[in-house]
Structure formats: C-alpha cells, structure tokens
Length: 408
Image (cartoon, rainbow, N blue to C red; front, top):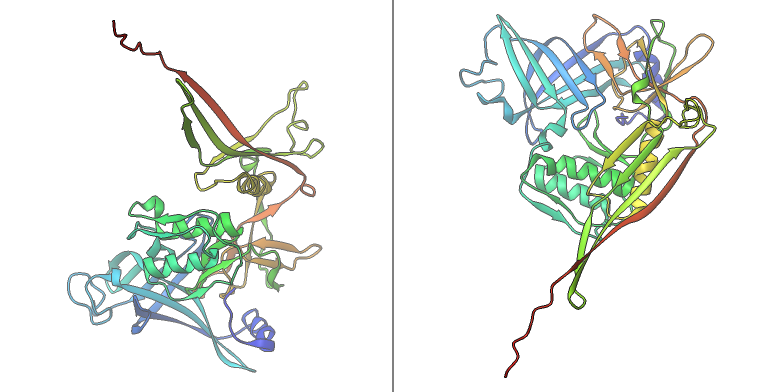
C-alpha cells in the first residue's frame, strides 16, 4: 500500500473516497529522472492489475490533443522529444478531505508501450516501472555473502538507475553469487526478483507510486469497505490444483581419477512436497480403485544450490498449488492507493470476503466501478509433507591398461 502520510487522518480519507465526493485526475509527464516536464489533458482511462511475472500494473489513457503536440512525426513541446521512450507518465487521483485538504494518491507511474491517435484524441498504453528492468543489462555480479536486500538495491540502482526504494534491511546474506547479463533471462528485474524470492522469501514489486518495494506477501487487509456495488460472480479453476511438488536445483559434476579409472559424481539438491493422506486433495483422497491420483508440479531452477532452499521452494509451491482458485468478481467504489497482491476486506451481507488484488481494474473516470477478480479459497487447514535430499549419480569409467615397452 502506498503511504499517504496521513497518520490518524487516514480513516477520514477512506471515508471520503467511499462516499460522494469530487475529484480530479492529474496526468504528468516526467523525464527518466522523474523530473516534471509537462502535463496532459485527461479524458478517460483505467489502471489494470494482473497476475503475471514482471509487469503487474498497466494503464490505458485517453488524452485530448487537438493541436497535435503529441505526434511522433515531429518535435513535441509536451514531451520535449519525438521519441516517447525517454518519458514516464504519472497519474494521480486528487480528492479534498475536509479535515486534511487535498490528498493525492499516485495510481500509476511508468513508461509508454503503445501510442495511437484518432483525430484530436490520443490513446496511450503504459506499463509500470518494472518494464525498465526487464531487458538484459551491463553485466553485474553480487557476490556470495553480501546482504541480500543490499544486493537487490545495488542491482536495480547500478543496472537501471533506480533511486526510489522501499527495501527493509535484512540480515540474511546471499548463499551464492547472482549475475545480471545481456540476456533477457538474466535481466536486472529477473535476478533481483530471484534474490527476493529464494533468499528472503519475499516478493519484489513496483508500488503504485513507483517505488521498488521488497515485502512479505501481505497477510492482513489494508482496508475494509461496505461500498460493494454488485453481487459476486464466481468461477472455480480446477486446473490450478497440484498435490505433489518436486523441486530440483543446480546439478554439479565432479570427477576423480583413482588409479586407472575415472569416477564421475553428479549431485543435485532435490525436495518433494506432497499433500498428506486425509486431506481433501491428497493423492489417496483422489484415488480410483485404490490407485492414488497424483497431480504433479515439477520445478527445475539452477538458482537453488542447497537442499534447504529446495525444501523451502517445494513448500511454497505446494502452499500455492494444493488449493482451488476461486475467482469471484466484485465491483466496488474505486480506491487508488493499493498495490498488487494487497488484501482488501469487502463487507457483505451475511459474510465478509477477503480478496487479494491479483486481477483488478480501477477506473480513472466516472464511467464505472472498480472490479476485483481474484480470491483464494482453501478447503481446510494446510497439511503437507516435505522431504529433501541430494541426488547423487556415480559413473565409473574403466580405462584399458597400456603396455609399456620392454627393453630386451
């Protein structure tokens, strides 16, 4: 959640946005150092949150440009350049709270991805700031033993020029070196996210106000609202279910040559997590004619070098996979300061619903309500069995003895 700096006036802000109020949407143009260089005339738009790797927040804007200053074909007074890739767009929702004054919540900041013109209107699609870190970069390595949170800051600042961080200090140090490279598979965002996930058990996101944010997955709602405007429509996806997870890490090979033979040993950390018998989704509970039904998930990740890391990853994957994803879609009065994966409590007649903001759409105009479309439902308390070990494979190659020349 974006900090608004309201202190004990925060409840006044929440009460205001969930009641009748006037507001304005400000669209600012920034350079890549986030200095203000211009403004745009807002007509309509929305911000979308999505469950994905990388870009989690996108924005669609319709802007007024009757004089054509946003055209690509010539120099633009508004952007200062005919190429938009050197600009960021910031969108803010501003509402007057009687006890505070104007409160501005930054709903979005990021670079444009597409641009289209129709007469005097310009349509722009934007991505959050993770898009600036998803391509390969000048190679950088953070060494084993470095504080993991410091490594994340170093990668993003050194490779992308990022300077806005919400990264708490951790004492845990890197269990292995991590390297950013030219290939997109080793981009700054990919490597930094890997450190967050594997070393710290955290997630790395760009907050709605453009801060690189390292945090635990939220476990408490950031707000509660009674301003729900529709009955939920529910779908359940059974294809997301897994009851057996195997995680394998990096394979290493060593060779020794005792005598006339070469012994090659291959080791690989491995862990298996499974739902315990008696659980609704266990292989035994889904058995047919006594034959257990496994729903396997296989994970191979060279970033895992220890059995303990493989065991933690297997448990995390099973925690996400041994449950049904129930996706009720709610509509409510919009709020603008929440981040992806934040929890929100919707106060409904009879029973409240706690919803995680995985997929959501936030209208910026007055044409609709906010839609929230993801929710995890667990049939019963978690129960799993996790084992881990090193896989060892040994290969012995016998060499033929060579005859030595005998002097006569």
